[in-house]
Image (cartoon, rainbow, N blue to C red; front, side):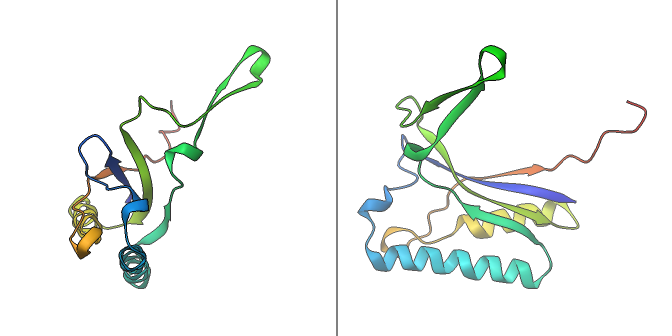
Length: 133
């Protein structure tokens, strides 16, 4: 079964200190942890994909307008206190394993080398609907 693990941060609660406040060594440790975690998941045959996302200031919200033409709203979005920082798609035998992976990646180091213990949302990826629908 495939699961999407969503790495979310909240600026309101201080879960994720702004990356601009981290030292270069802290950033390197964080990225190194993620590379190592992805490598282990790949070696175990569980990693389908995983990516970090650009900051919310680089986001665009797109809706269809008149005649389907794109209507684009660009960031920053001041009302947004939480944001999606990255994701993994994993293919595991059980939901418990997906939760175990989420708990592990939650411990990625942040400032001072301390674990961030960031929230990771675990969601099953739906399969196609039954043919009779």
